[in-house]
Length: 266
Length: 278
Image (cartoon, rainbow over all chains, first blue to last red; front, side, top):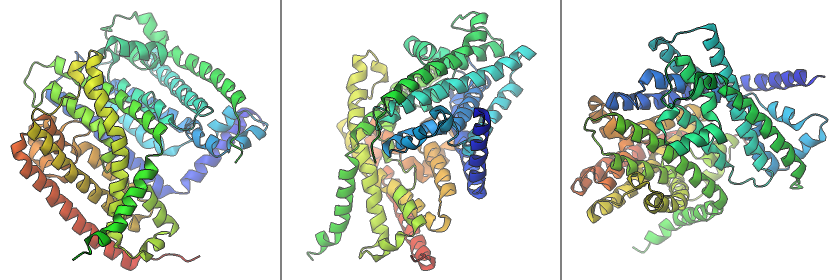
């Protein structure tokens, strides 16, 4: 069986399993829609007080917010296996994966495709729709493609971060919350245009964990607005490729981690 | 009349056992501390940009916001975000039957557990967090972002009193959610609804004074203001220490109402509870 077919098998099993609890799924989806909806209401409250942030309007912020929410919810749904990896190592369950004649990466991706993220995805899409409706974006085929590309590359980037988190579990299973700063914290940070932050903060999220490359830079290009940071338009269009690049590096680190692995023996 | 300590002893034992258990996880606490500092930076960067973008007079100064945000990060674990996982598991597995066998009042037991669950992690996180936010940040040249001490000793005392009531109020809320699980088993709906209300209406997402003027009387009257907003504003001096009786009255009245509601729901829930044998 090819890797792709095996993966699809994993996914269909996972989805069917989750749909057994339909009421629970619906409640959670609606609940997360509400929670994240109130989070956006918080942004609205601030705009009602202050009017604008560094020259950006509510609708423009909503555009970045929608993009990153969609990106994160997709990554979170696909990367769930890596997210729970710390516990697998702790309880020695990773041994089972190593015994199977398939790559560990494939098996971890197949661990679960989490449906619960649908609530966040829907909320992100709603906020993005509000932004697109309010702003006069000069749409073109290229801009639509860039939006899709930026989201896809962002998913690669976030999965890369979660793979690094999982890799660190080979050395310590405690303290994995450290990475939340880059996943959940990265999402919060990216909800606003990165131009509003201090230079060292911006540089970190452009060159070390390149979230700006998959959200802010392509976002500015799509909005068709000059970047207050002065990046050339060409850079804005190719920047998202930093996401897949980051993922490739993460997989290399993962391979090193797997070689280093010693079972707990339990 | 020497029965007081005897009556309290089981509850004290529960609180101290939990406390010692939670204090074991130091690495997790360190990672949590780092994450919360990071979030504090993001939030304050955003406020700083907002304050720079508007010349209009705001209901709170940026320095007050900074203290408010750091207090929020320091005391995050005290908020009733969630139902207790162990109660949830007990209701699902039927182990709740053992709880009924214990010769102490069940509401008191769950309330005592809730207190332990909220204080141990909070102490562990709040102390280093406050030190970093009040002393570390000025050393980094971020003096405007620091957690400033209360403007007067009276404000500090007022904050201390209100914080005790915050704990009681929070535990009354989370115990109520725990009890609701006798009906819903998974408790997912109530828990998510609770998280949404608590984070938004307590001032955790946006400090309540920044809410639109028409919403002020509503958010101030609700119990959630007593969890974050009222004590934090006492700390920063946004509410003078002279107003502390009103704050305490607000918190304690809501606590009392929630305890009464919780107790009556619990006794009704226990009448219809069915535990499968085996």
